[in-house]
Length: 170
Image (cartoon, rainbow, N blue to C red; front, side, top):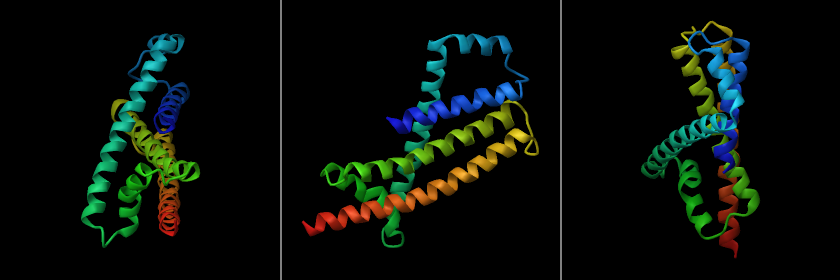
């Protein structure tokens, strides 16, 4: 649930803050104030963003899982993280800490997707160029998120391996 709600809140919040700092050339300020004044409208937008991010993340995960299965011997770490964790989870072999560590990896992916969607929004819909401060700032945040996701992937892979070892010792 956290990998759905937190990225949606973050993306919506970042979008609104950026629009406050750099008003939209295409969205009427009155419309944004109406959205802000309605809890239902704001919640609906947050949920829509979150579901879009999650759908993209699921597609990425499915693609990486298929790739990991086809490259099992070449990429055993990726295979372990994307394939073997399901077997461990189904068997109840992942403790709360392992589940949290793996969840943080997928949370980072969802945050990166949100930043990428914001970058697309500002570059395409708001017609900003790469040398403006909002796209540059989003690119810096996206790079930081990708680096974080890579390190979290290594932690998650290590956690899956440790859970496999602990299960084998029983």
